Length: 444
Image (cartoon, rainbow, N blue to C red; front, side):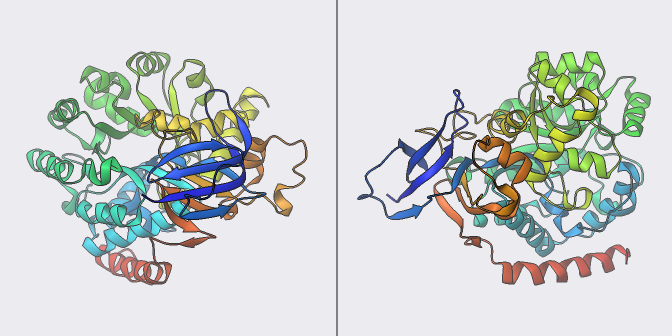
């Protein structure tokens, strides 16, 4: 058994009472076993002096594309469909096993450094096994899956799938990786969006999700042009169509959901569908601003994600929290989307989306030890006197304030030094990989 004792910290628990206390936190193996003042240090293998530090639940990002991290800076200033057709699909089609691995490692290093401990990740059509290898080695908690695309215009040949092959490859990956490392890694079926998927594929995904009791992760209602295509092809709006196929249930995670009508909001609420709000990506692709205050009033499960590096340029939850709060205030008033609301979306809200609210998302005895330690002793976070700690985190803190990250009881970053991702290897390999992909895709 390994034990870690975090001493003398400010602990933002995010428990049902919203308790914020000063004291110690004891980790035994992968679980939190005690929280309180002056815990006995004698059994601890590792003692972390966290005096004047703030401990928070690890962030849970519910929409990420690790396979796209290499494309950072390669898809700027385009709207969604042009961004996909001109840049992202050609680059994804050019991926090889090595580039997928280093793209994943590059993204995971950034995520761990900024306090994210769990992700819901969507890969590309091929080589997903190598993304799972990176996830396994890095220690991050993840739900991931290969993207599924068995139809669509202007899709590169390398991304065009046969329906049966797409389903079989997904099941093969699920049976290999789902539940790996005592459940740290889980599989999620990942049809890209309605435009890219036949009705046959989506119906089979519904059945497989029910059979294996795993999540389905897809995009919906991100862009007005996308919705027009779906209506022209199906005669229905996105969410109505997904509900018609039986996919709208508590296992479904929908990224974006910007352009919803009232009937679609009702379906999402009644079926228990989870929405991943990605404000940075939605602004950069000029997609729009999701009506998150309305969704929260309807008790819709809304969490946060950075999306991918080429439509956001960073994978930083601090940035997403701040944007999620600020973009609503000119529309709904200054009290809309306060700091506590968006911090909850980034932690326990994300846990609810992945079906793990009893395991992660808050710091409580018996839960998994997924957490970050922040150093908020700096010019940009002071004065601290009589300031709400959550307000400091959401509105003032940055990813540079994350000092230590622990996932599943394992220290994956300490004093800003990554233990599971080798920066000296990943950065040069990332450059070599994107150079190769750009040449292959003829996009230089």
